[in-house]
Length: 163
Image (cartoon, rainbow, N blue to C red; front, side, top):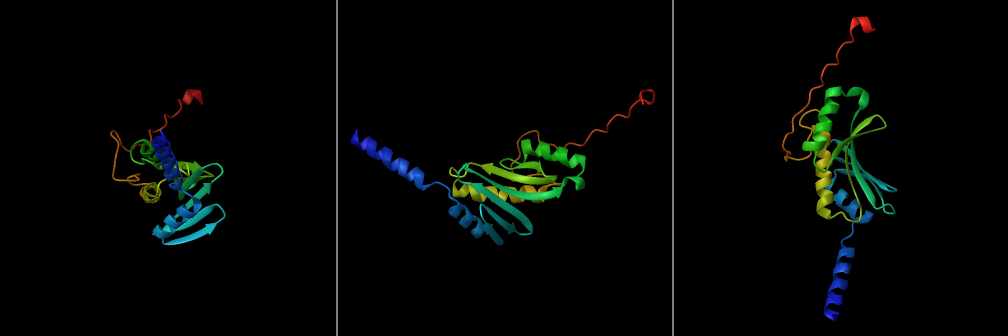
């Protein structure tokens, strides 16, 4: 019985030691990014020419890695439809989203439960989804079945006698 309790205590201690912290998150991003700017609870950084931002909140145990893609006014309806299809088939752990009239690629996850590998994979996926918007709309080479780009259907014209 004592052996079982000791094993449980060591397991809990090991799990606690594996928690992602803002310091570990910042270090992983700094090792990956070309440039970084750390401010309060966010890290703004560049990978190649793409800007990414990591926002975290320890109290809420949440984090996001985001990348702005385009202003909504500059995006065609077909691109929005393709992004929505991609959210199901080719964007995988990253999603396309709209906030404050900007299209973003977004990865959201509980902060403490993240592994180093998940952070590095998220950085790659957010970057890939950002630069492939308008073409393959993908975050990796993996595709779930049924992924096809959608073309917007033309809206039917109203009948003249109903105007």
